[in-house]
Amino acid sequence: MSKSKSDTKTPVKRSFRPIGWATDRFKRILRFALKLLIIAVTAAAVIVFIFRFVNPPVNYYMASEWYRLGEMKRHWVPIETFPDYMARSVVAAEDANFCHHSGFDFSSIQKALSGKGKLRGASTLSQQVSKNVFLWHGRSWVRKGFEAGFTVLVEMLWTKERIVEVYLNVAEFDEGVFGVGAAARHYFGVQPNKITRLQAARLAAVLPSPKTRSASRPTAFVRKRTSQILSGEATIAADGRADCFQ
Image (cartoon, rainbow, N blue to C red; front, side):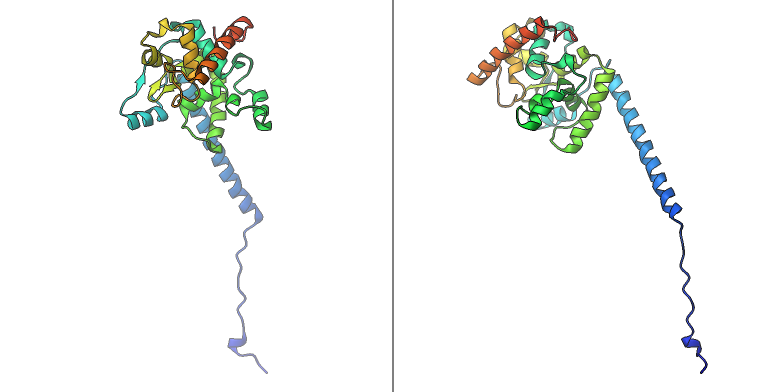
């Protein structure tokens, strides 16, 4: 019996792409991603380097508070204008080992992860500056990743003195009050160069909760914290832990 035309099936031609095609595409994507990463890191490094000499402008958080409150107090003051104990008070309160690490206090991080320390204590002055100057506030892992990257750049491209100077001028001390220069006038009605040792410790005691603490109307907790900072400030002055920025 002969087969009809309908019984005859035309073989289906299948296109074939070698495995190398997928590999080449992956390589192109990888090269593109690498180029983007290099550009991003280079741009970030340039910005960080510029801010070693140029004072940082109003950041995202300052602008949002300005919009929310309708006003903002901020006055940039060079670090040499402050009494030495002002910088020491902030370092003693926030990062006593500031001079002994390169941006990350791994011993404090380990204690925080093991539950033996506070997570805030694991955040160094360099990390806080990176967050306050270059990033937004938040607790996401993405932001923490950017924070780590900027912290490395800040430690590489800035001096320790510059890190402290920027922190003294960008930290929040009350709602809409940024920097020690504005805080000195806001709380005590004094010029930054006239801050007393007690007032310096009071300002440092407000950190890291300026919205719930007051330097001019201190609670029992703030008074206790002030005494601890006064002691810590004297200690780091005596044992050399303030030498890198003074």
